[in-house]
Image (cartoon, rainbow, N blue to C red):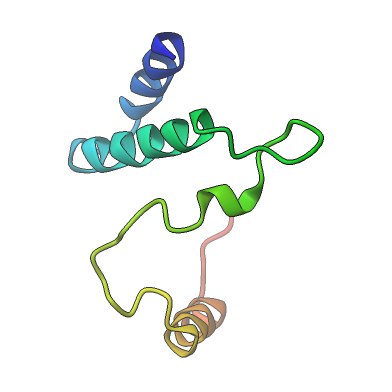
Length: 82
């Protein structure tokens, strides 16, 4: 697991400094969850094993109406193309 942490830390250096700690905590929680034996019958990780791993601190983060509103706003917003 030390090798995985080193790879994660290298990738984190590409993020803004204020996000690095939060992303590292999230990645560590995913790794810990994977070590707890939450695998499917074919040895791969179940996507459900990642549910609830990260708490954004926002009680409404799973509010589907809010999510739909955010998505709609982004769809109509003009974006620059390369």
